[in-house]
Image 1 (tube, rainbow, N blue to C red):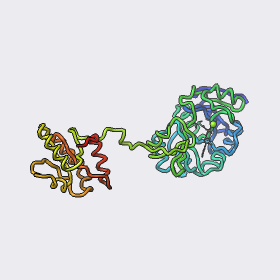
Image 2: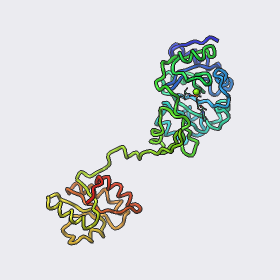
Image 3: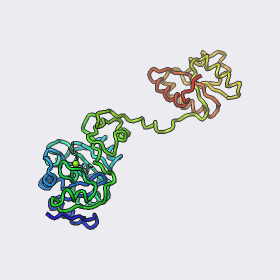
Image 4: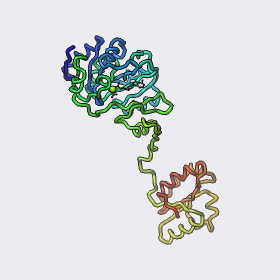
Length: 331
Ligand code: TXA
Ligand code: MG
């Protein structure tokens, strides 16, 4: 067999003709070159295994160029897989999901699952789109050889075994896609790649890395500056220290205000002299009123002195926000 190398533009028609005739074609992707065939055509898929010398029990990734085809090869993607696809596709990721009946056992090697990949490489997308079918493809190397990242690499390894290599230049990513198993209890990286467990965790909340470590997302909000009042704020260790600090602020003409629960406020001596915002009686009321109190306080006062609500139940959650707003300042 003669092996031709053609650019995407020059070779596209030939490539589509070959795929429609049940043959294999090598095509570029941003990760490594792939050895493609019509994923819905069993005899075409067998030619991949023959050209590569690959054992039939090793499943193939199915390449698509749109989300509808991704849906059609899966038996229902599920929310997690959809999130990954929205975040990282097209790109260097393969998502393992339950397969639909469209996908023959030869592609999945008898597994109930399928790996779906939507490459970012423009030439790859043109090729897959023009074929009009999902393309099963492993890396375009003979079994046990290094994955090819240029048309020349493919030619050196596979000449005489494939009819056509589409040349799309050298691969920008350079290693195979990250594979994420979305059928596992915790989404699991089966092969590490350019898309890291940290990046996956930001989208999924939690993933198991290839090394078996559970990676948890930083709470998305941690990346941003939190609401903090425009005036200084401090948490008082006790009602007494609140009163003392209040007096000190007043002496310096700082216009302090105390925000606290009703009981706390009434326990302060000679209550009348304190500017205060009453948050209510219970922790739940405090939670409901705390932001409104901070908004009001920053508008009308110069320093906020806040009760310490403790660390039980929702009070702990409220203190989380107060500690951020006050920058951990205590008096
Ligand atoms: O970047 C890539 O993923 C490249 C380009 C061409 O897309 N493809 C690639 O394919 O690296 P391949 O066949 O060389 O590696 C795919 C790996 C294999 O180790 C295979 O066992 C695994 O993915 N795999 C495929 N389908 C699977 C499935 N349903 N469940 C678990 N592993 C699967
Ligand atoms: Mg490979």
